[in-house]
Image 1 (cartoon, rainbow, N blue to C red):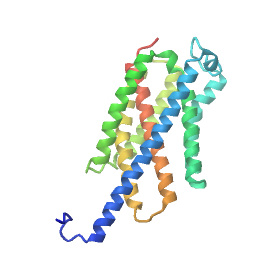
Image 2: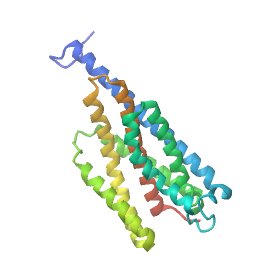
Image 3: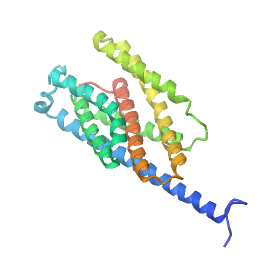
Image 4: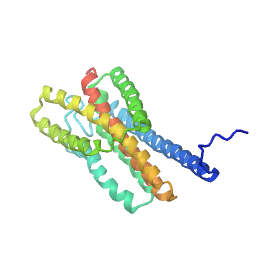
Length: 247
């Protein structure tokens, strides 16, 4: 049988490389799988609440969609949970972190439930499909590219902070033009973050693959799923603002 190993590569080295490659595939599958379950929970909760005026009325006025006190709490709860996610990852097991992620996904669903009243169901499905295709392409590029895009991180995070500040300001200004600009910039920022986070997940795995720390790998997969989940959700919401048809 012909030997297709690179010249000079020992059988042991080749086997170890193949083991790392298999481990990386399993790691990425866990990342995408955990993210997908989180997405399913989010949209199931959002649809269940958004399609029920009684449930939506607990958080918002069903007619004007203005949030009440509980609605404001639900709106900012995901942001608070993101800040607390690091402490959960560090102090608790991977299983506990995964449970926290699914709870976070459900709370995010509550905060997004209003879109099923504000936008037509067809436009939500259409934008979700567009986002899915764009996300898949960007994530695949981030995984396969040989270019080091780690330098993007600091600029993209600064962009996210700027977006949050601009969105808070526009909550008071209610400027359609400012919201349009925020949405355009937001799509670009989270498109970049999708590629950046995918490459970061891959490089972090390869850097730790030799250690065999299964607990760390489990937690890293959940953190990676959270990052990609946030990239998808934010890109979806900004595209919905740009392309969605309102009721």
